[in-house]
Image 1 (cartoon, one colour):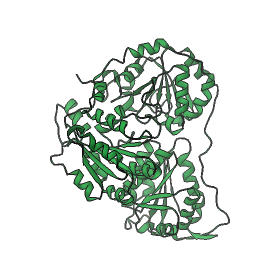
Image 2: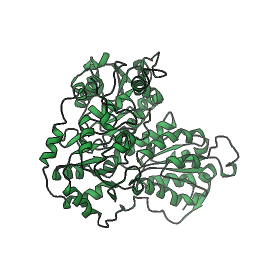
Image 3: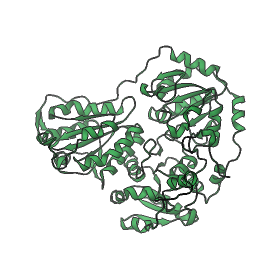
Image 4: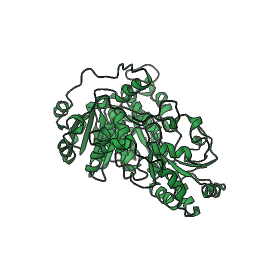
Length: 553
């Protein structure tokens, strides 16, 4: 067989089962696009390369499989970097194929040349600079193997233009790249883990995105119920337990539920599954569960003991460890521990706010109760994200898509679109804020073009809400550069792109507008003006202990 490098890339992607690729063409990727012209792979023309990266993330976050985006050299590649960094911190598998100037021009400051390999090295799991077309036969399958193996992550394949046009002869196709075997070493850790759980009086499961990524949600529920162990979650772990499971205490950390923060402080054993002790979760590390023993389970051995010393470190993915530990766990009810936790569940302002239909939490709970049970929800970053994490009735893993580690504004709309491409028969809801929405507004053109079944709920408070809240609370109310003195007519903008729009009235008072937007089959926007002075509670001050959380009086 003989073909050029670009044709080889496309055929190898087809063999990986890739059906969709997102991107924008440019001079350094024209050979690749010429090859895509002949391919059954569906190319989605986005309006910005960052949008392409986040749409690939939306597919990957909902399927667990690596998705693909592409960009040309120079600014195309640099525009991808934020989406790559976001995927890297949240362990999302994706493969980005970037064009590069011809090899003879590399290092000469040629037109649209940047060192893509060097720039992406810190924000990817791995990257490749391909010097010969024949190397693609190993590089492309290897990129997928790396992206999906162990702790998932993004991989970049940078291909100079002359490598794309270079002819190559080969005898047979390589096997598609598949995830490597699950890494597992027992060394007696299972028996020690079972013994620690058995001897514990007040154990707690502390779960993160690793439980969701490993497919371990059902196993977690079984272990929790069998041994009577309550569960708290990070932002990325939401969905591993249903929101109304009696053993689920909610999200932990800066904007977590009071009962989760208080109960964790009383636990004598923390079983940390697929987490990395992020500072937004732990608060002041020295004060975080200081008297508790810690079993830290993570597929990435470098995470174990990196931030918090572990009494027992277990290297393996959460699903594998839960599968192996379940038969060794005794059946317990732990009534005393549950009674102690129940005493912490007194009514709180946050709980009252969810019951108030005109508080942002109440609006979000209303949306969650009206949306289909299998709906997928994406958010941007800000106050609306925290209200969603606190109030949306998340029932299933991979149904709540949030930027956790990087906290990227502009994430929501394109990620929701990627989820819609991957799940065409499901309703997708994007909950965003005015500040975040403006950052990738151009993708409304892509949304309208493909008539995706997405309802965007825009909570418009005229501010960068979380910034304004911290300025008010911790910077002597010096509200500066966080208030929009003029706001656009978002409904008119959406209609200009060909998207149906509704106004839900102040604080969502026009419930029929929300209902109509959610029922609409196709792209829609509902604007919900909210009070710009409303804060998210509880809140742990930066650098403080979780027990120092501030609750509304």
